[in-house]
Length: 291
Image 1 (cartoon, rainbow, N blue to C red):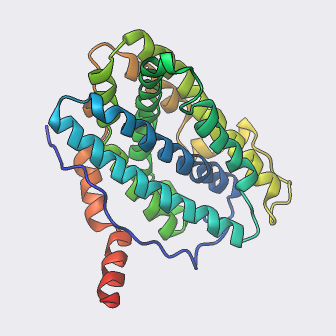
Image 2: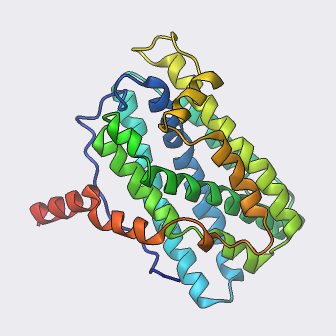
């Protein structure tokens, strides 16, 4: 099985030429995927915060190094997606009213003070299980975007596609870390099952809610298009979005006895994309020009 050193990579994205509807003529696909930008910054900052709390309990030094590399990657992802939100605001679509609700979920509902101090260790295990479940879905979505040639054929903005594929590739690369950490600290199959049954449907429904908010506030669409399931199924049939079937099947895959995330996703494809990502090349050019 191929392995890799998990480490953050410095990237640079230039958004000046990216239109509001970065999938031309398809605001529904644009905004359904834009839901990731609305969920990920707060979510990934939360991942890092929880993993910092888990570090003292890790006795496997290799796993500890992978967790630290994971934290570095997730922090970089959060910054990259936050800049997309800023670009959306500059184009007249302010996502922050919805994003503030997302931040409340991670900072308050799933925050440190949700349970009394006596339950801190239990709450850490719960949150590690939630992160492991979410990371399974981000790896599934990461592999999907690496394979999403129909978006290229539709003329999707290359900078946005590079962000999504660079991020997706790193999700495939570190797909095992959250699961391995959960198994190392706890490993309860009941907790693993319960958190996945909650996290899986919640991710899909939140993306749909995000799309609904963006479509309702889009200065071009002006509410003429809504986030109906029929629109989703049509785009999924065109392979511009992952099918609901593929997202649903991710749950029993994760809950299968003997499952390990390394069994899913194409690591070589992910590393090959990272090696050619224009964002990394642009950062290097910017760094050299600044020296």
